[in-house]
Structure formats: C-alpha cells, structure tokens
Length: 311
Image 1 (cartoon, rainbow, N blue to C red):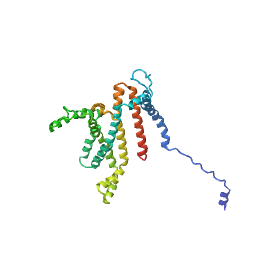
Image 2: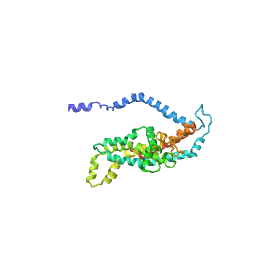
Image 3: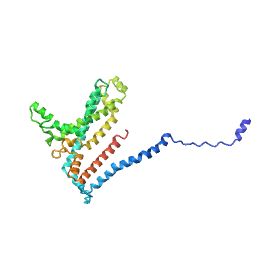
Image 4: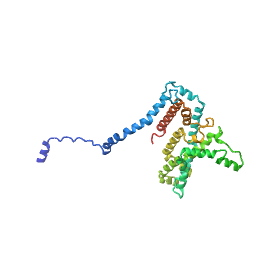
C-alpha cells in the first residue's frame, strides 16, 4: 500500500529525447571531401571544362591557330563541315566500325570466353595470346599491320607469291582499305571484351548451370536461357565500351592508312587531326570536336539511362 501511494504521488517522468548520433563514417567524410574534392574539381575544370569551352568558342571563328581569333563566322564552320564529303565518309566509317564491333567483335569475344573461362591446363596461355594485341600500343599495331598489308614486301605479298596470284594492294585500294582496317580493329580489341566476359562467366554460380543440365537443357539452351541472361550486365558494359571506343578511334588508323586513300578510311578524330591540326583550320577542327563531344555525350547518357539504369 505504501509503495502504491508513493508511486501515485510521484511526479511524472519527463520523456527522454532521442539523440541523433552521427556515424563515424559521416563524421570522417567532411575532412576527406575538403581535402580531396577541390583538387579534383580544379583538375577537371582545367583539363575538361575549359578545353570544351575553348573548342566551342573557336568553332565560331575562322582561325589558323596564330594570334587571336578575330574573324567571327558563326555557324559557318558547321555548315562547311556537314557539306564536306570527307566528313560524311568519316561519319559512315564510324558507324561501320560500331556495327562491326557489335556484330563481329563482341560475339567472337563471347565465344572465346565460353571456351577459356574454365580452369583447364594451358588455358592461361591461350588467354594471354588473345589478350596481348590489346596490350600492344595502337601505333605499334598499326605499323605492324601496315607491313603485313604491304603489297611489295609484306606478309600478304609473300602469301600471294606463294600461291601464285596477283598481290593485292589493299591499303592503296579505296574500296577495300576500310575493310582491311576493320580486320585490324577486331584483332586489336576483341581480347579486351573477351577478358570482360571471362570475368562475368566466372562470377556465375555453377549450381545454376548444373541444375539446368539436370533438367535436361542442351548446351545452347543453357547458354540462351541461363548464361546469357546472367551475363547481361557484362554485355551491356561491353557494348558501351565498343560504341564509345569506335567513335574515338584514332591511334590505330593514323600509322596504318593516315585516313587515306582519298579519305576512304577517315574517322571523325582523324578528320579533326588532318584538317584541324595538319592543315591549320583550327575553327573547322574545333567544330568537329564539338560534334564529336555532342555525339559521345548523347550516346553515353542515353545508353546509360535506357540500358544501364539498373546496373
């Protein structure tokens, strides 16, 4: 009774307020941001934002690179650019490289990855052989293949002489030079995509494939309904790299053909170098850079939003 009375007469206890504690991660984030973010922003501004702005500014002038640009021409550089047959050919070539990369290079990489993803004796050596062309510098690869295609002293000339047929001069033929370049592109870059797919295949749970095999699935059915869906994020990433890389192709083509013969192997970047740097038409070259930037940004963000929004 005494206890009950004491409790009844006691003053109500004030509710304890909830105190929000910051996690150690949140407390330690601010010094890291203060220390590392300003240098990153500064470098990004100096080497990305400012060059982009300068290219957009120079594209409005007719300028040879000497002195200060004074002859304002507005959008005339873009008009000249899209009426230029060599630039139209460069756009077509970039599109052709993208198509070949998607329809030939990536399927070849997946096929080889399916064979080399298993832990077998000597499989590491085969991976190395197929990956080595990607490690090789683009300029060196272009020079090597230029010798291979040489119609007088190259490997192709030796094979033609052995077979007793006329030696083809593929790099000097306007109709066939681009196809010779496409062969080199596939040889050079499919190893990179192959390694991506090997990594993706090794991440797949083997029990899923074993369950499909127990259910009676054939090899093609396991690939079509199990492996490929589980590999879809890797495929999307590989396609993205193939598209963006195809638009920026430059180092391989310059030592191989230099954009010739008769501009038949030009890409947008080689066209920019040939006309904007070599011929000192900086305004026109800057217009090419602006067009290339807009295409890359549009494709990158559009692809990310449509195909990679869940990755």
